[in-house]
Image (cartoon, rainbow, N blue to C red; front, side, top):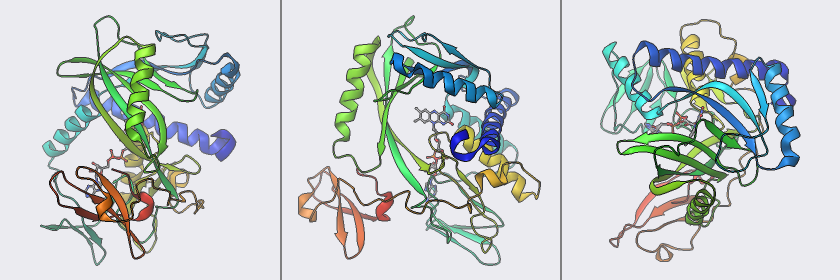
Length: 366
Ligand SMILES: Cc1cc2nc3c(=O)[nH]c(=O)nc-3n(C[C@H](O)[C@H](O)[C@H](O)COP(=O)(O)OP(=O)(O)OC[C@H]3O[C@@H](n4cnc5c(N)ncnc54)[C@H](O)[C@@H]3O)c2cc1C
C-alpha cells in the first residue's frame, strides 16, 4: 500500500482501520455486547521458504506505520509453515452477534430499524425520499451501505469489482482448536480462524478469491477447500458453507462520502476490499463527522470523487450465459440477453421462471 498510495495515505489508512477496531472494542465493552469478543493474535503466513523475505518486508512496512509486527519462523498452526508476520492483540468476534448488540443499543437510544425492507428507489427533492415499494421515508441524509451503492447519479460498477470467497465451517474436537487468525499469502490462499454456533466450536476457513460470476463451477471450489482442510487440519463434519462477496477498488482504498456535490446528503460506503468490518466502522465515523460538519483526517483518503480507473471492472465474462430460457434446468439459473440487457433468471424446481434485472457487470452467477 505504501508503494501504491504513498506513505502519508497508507498511514491514514492504517490509522482509520485501527480506529475502527478500537471503536468496535470500546462499544463491545461499554454496551456489554455478547459476541465472543477475544483479543487474538493475527498472522500472515507462508508455507514457502522462498517467500520469507516478503514477510520480512511487510513487517518493516507495518512497523513504519506504527504497528507492532514481528516475524516468526513458523505459526502455531498444525501444519508446516515457513514464516509468518504476527500482529498481537487483534480482535476476534462474531460480527452478527456484534450487530445484534449494536442494533439493540440504537433502539434503546430511540433509533428505529426497519428490517425486511428492500429499498427500491432513492429520489432527491427538498429532502431525500427512500421508497421500499410498500412505504417510504423522508430524510436529510441517506447512507448507501449496500455493498455496491444502489442509487445516486455516480455509478460505481466500473470503479469497483465484486469478488467472492468460498467459506466453510467445520466441527472441531475440543483441544484441537487453532489459536489466532491466519491469512496465507501462497496460492491458493487460505485463511483460518475459530468461530462458534449453538452446537459448539467451529473452524472457519476461506478459500482463494475469484471474480463474481466468472467461475463456471463454484461447487468444485467447495470440494477443493474441503480436501485442503482434511489434508491439513483435524476437522470434523462440515457444519456451514457459504460464499461471501466484497467489492475491490483499484487502489485498495474504499470510497466513502458524498460522491456528487449536486446530491448533498447522499453518502456511499463501498469498495472495502474484504476489510469492511474495520474500514466500514471507520466509514461510519467519517460520515458521522461529515453530517455534523466536523473535520476528519480521512476525508481525502476515502474520497469517492478521487480519480479512479474507469475500467477496473471490465465485466462481461459471466460463465452463466445461456441462449434461451429452455437451456436453464429446474432448480438452476443463468443469464440471458434481452435486447441490450443481461437478465438473471432463476428456474425453481417447479416449472416456472423468475426474472430479475441486474446491471451486467455486477451479476453474480447463481
Ligand atoms: C469469514 C470472513 C472473515 C472476514 N474477516 C474480516 C476481518 O477480519 N476484518 C474485516 O474488516 N473484514 C472482514 N471480512 C469482510 C467483511 O465481513 C465485509 O467486508 C463486510 O461485512 C462488508 O460490509 P458491508 O456493510 O459493505 O456489506 P454487507 O455486510 O454485505 O451489508 C450490505 C447490506 O446491505 C443490504 N442491502 C443491499 N441492497 C439493499 C437494498 N436495496 N435495500 C435495503 N438493504 C439492502 C444487504 O441486505 C446487506 O445487509 C470477513 C468476511 C468473511 C466472510
